[in-house]
Image (cartoon, rainbow, N blue to C red; front, side):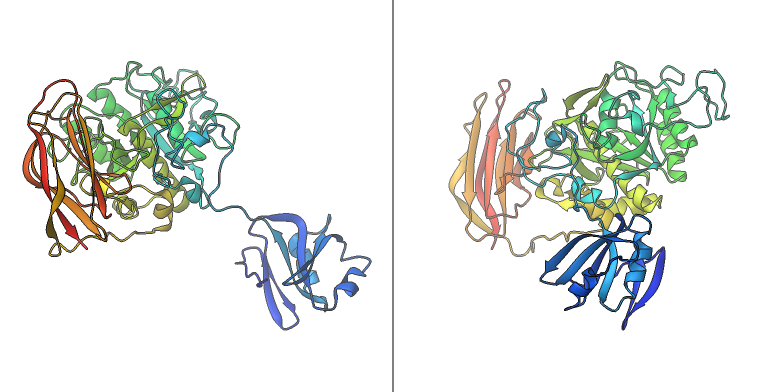
Length: 552
């Protein structure tokens, strides 16, 4: 057993023989308990003592590392007892009986096993009705929440504004994490804190222009549960954060829609209250100078603005989606990925405009009335990122938004599914983010590609059949990188697809529309699978692939 050197905060230096020891009770330990290593040959003499400075023997242990005794005192602190014991000639050393816990903590919430976004086992994705989907996932394709919780589970000092349809602030899984305006007196119809808003106890309802941001829709409560459903309370789910202060800022009606004037009012309220982060799972409309100005005002105060990339399955580089497309430093645009570690089919993307991907398909979370449902969308991916950023703020405090955003992107887990669809080229990982673990982005030498003909040409009928599904796998033994050259494809855009998967089953690229002599993104495996699917409407040319490019 190695001598444990513990950093001292409340400490006392003690000299024991030739060894100077510094003891500390900064870290969790069993009150009044001390672990003593007795010098070789002195155990009998030590145990023969009638009293151990007012302590009693709890147990003794004969280990490979030597003889150990656990002493417990009802009157002395562990620090005081250990300090005195270290002065006895028969004692090699004595130290507090420290408490340890697993790095990567689980939680006892009964529905935790279905939260694949936090902990993906490869077989725990729920279906739309809350049962199990039965679709195999990719184990570990999650935000590494359990490892991150070994560092921090959050802090009440961090305030996150959920700008949405409101929050059921009485929900059993959320009520302990709801922000309360301590300067406002409930129900007196006065603006007690002078912020221009009357009775804003838990936030503000910009839609109804009152202080009751109760959720009558479900969307905002669902997002809130992903951020911060309480851990270990014996009910429901668990959020990315166990502790935070959720501010309910409602501008979307119970029908789920809202207008620009109410949106900018909602953002202005959260900015005026100086929240740490705004979570925005909404979008629509064209460019608005007013909305951009509101976001810029938040940016000027160092407030992060996390926004859903959109659910149209389109490229935000060419077809902007707002507010996620505003080019303001505090904006973090979020795409959705699946339990299979691929970009969700509905998710918008953009190599120049969408920053990261996060879990957003078949996400179980809280809904009003102490209920729980499964939703999908970039709306569900956004609160995962808001929670991850909240953990960071809990641990390190507010920092320059550009610095935080760069670190968030640089610590993502890279993958072929995200290489051409996000700026970061990866999915968010909370543990990497907290520890600033940056995975090198490796890629092929562009001069090393060589063209090889496929042993069997991939080709649909021309035109292709309705409800067609064609799947073929190509293997190049020993290959490091493989990509295909699509001689021609022409499908009904956004309905019929040509999909490339790597050897692990992750989607590398999904093509729809038309193109010629198109080189796909590369797979970092020696085999690739091509899938062609069509629906029951229009039938067009289809696809033909004759060649691959390979690096060995």
